[in-house]
View 1 (tube, rainbow, N blue to C red):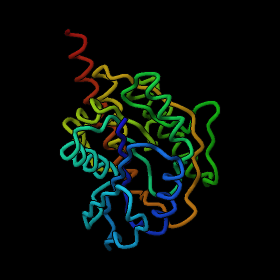
View 2: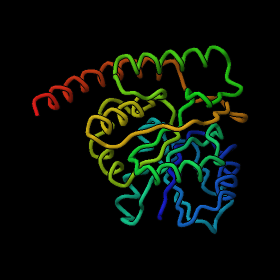
View 3: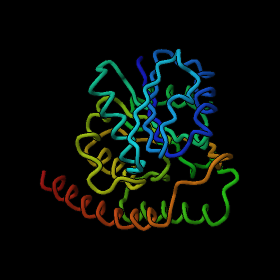
Length: 244
C-alpha cells in the first residue's frame, strides 16, 4: 500500500532530520515524504536522507499550516495517482513516529477515511506542555465540540491519516475558511457531514524540545473567527441533509 507523509514546516530545520530518522526507523514500505516549507530560508540542502523519496516544496513565506497540508496533498494527488493513504504530522517531534504502524493498521482494519490522533482519549497523554497551553487547547476543543457537534474529542491535533478519497475531497472543498489551524476543524466537519468514516485513536503528545512554537495569538483569534464560519457552514450542511 502506497503511503505519503505530508509535513508542514516553518523554521523547523532544527527538527526535520530528527523526525525523518525516527520515521525511517518504522520501516514503512512504499513511502514518500513531502515537506512543505514556509521558512524564510530554504533548508533543502540540510536534509540528510538524500537516498530516500523526499519531496521538498519551498513556498518561501508563512502561508499557514492548513494551507501547507492541502498544498502538499494536492501536489501528490496531481503527480502520483497510486497513493492509497496520506498522513499529516508536525515537524517539531510532538507527534510520535513510533505510533505510525499502529495507526496505519487501525486505519486500514476499520476502513476509515479520517483517523485523528486524539490528545483527549482516556489513555492519551500530553507531556511537557505549560498549564496555560493545556487549558487553552482543552477549552478550544470543548468549544469546537459544543458548536460543531461531532463526537470527536480532539478537533485541533494535526496527526492524522486520510484515505485517497478523503484527500481528493478536502483539496477540492477545504481551505475556504482560513489557512491556519482552523483548517483541521474545517476538514473534520466537511468529511463527517459528507458521510466519510471518521474515528480517533489515543496518542502521546510531547511538547517540542527544540525551537519555538509557531502558534501566535493572532492565529488563535483567526481560529475563533474561523470556528464561527465553520458553524455557519455546518448549518448549511444540516439543512441540505434534512431536505434530502
